[in-house]
Image (cartoon, rainbow, N blue to C red; front, top):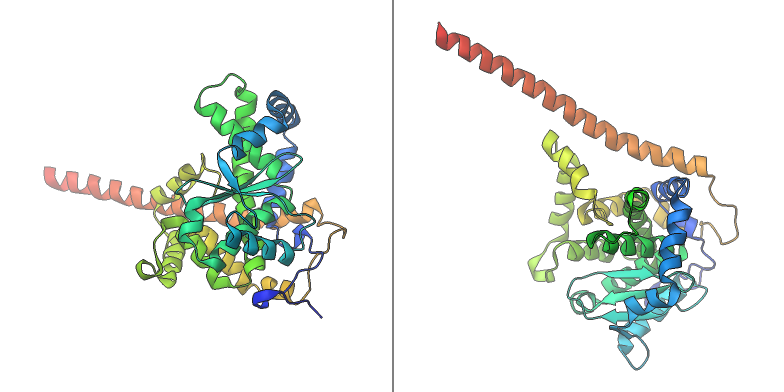
Length: 330
């Protein structure tokens, strides 16, 4: 029988990260590792900086959470670690940053930095979701590459010479993978809080902030559906362009993806104890690739449909304009 923790949550004993990882995440990471220059860039970046300076850069201007500092956050974090049966208590820090967000970083020793804006705006269940999301990144082995992404983005922004053409190619691959990894971590966050509505509310607050009196979850989910179904060719192009330089997918789409996962029944199966255990054989790369390619095909088909519709509309407008011009001469 499953063990129940405080607040009625199920302890997911010995759960493996493969249980929540999105197939597009695993396939994108595998593809990233196959870039010939990937390992070289990785060695150069971390050989240049080293573990300790990176940790200091993220932690020096933040407060470490403990029983004596942000004790209520520490209590919730302890529940999060227990629910996902984390192998250790990774350090948690709070940084004076008004934006609602958090991040998991590190090389050999992962840690989490929680923005103070999250502590102030999110309710307790939403905070549990966000902490579970970041713990999911750690347990999935994302932190090394996420840290590398942040460093490369910062170096590229100041034109530092270490970020040459090879590193920029790797950075584009990292950004593509990073967006897919968020879909996995959202699932881990949901498995932690075990309240789908709280998870979806968190996406809404990450997108626009606001108090419960100022927002409506049903309206936000309608917005997500409208965005996914929008039919203008220019909008389809901007969907791609808007994401090229970002580490995260749009919050509306993340909420829709998470809702789809719940409706698929996979979330309930995991809570019943039907999940991948640590040490079990992992999902084959080609299986992940096939599952991810289906998702990519659907996205591509949507874009191509928009392009075809736009082309037909443009051709119709040209014919109408030519026809009007000839009528005007008659």
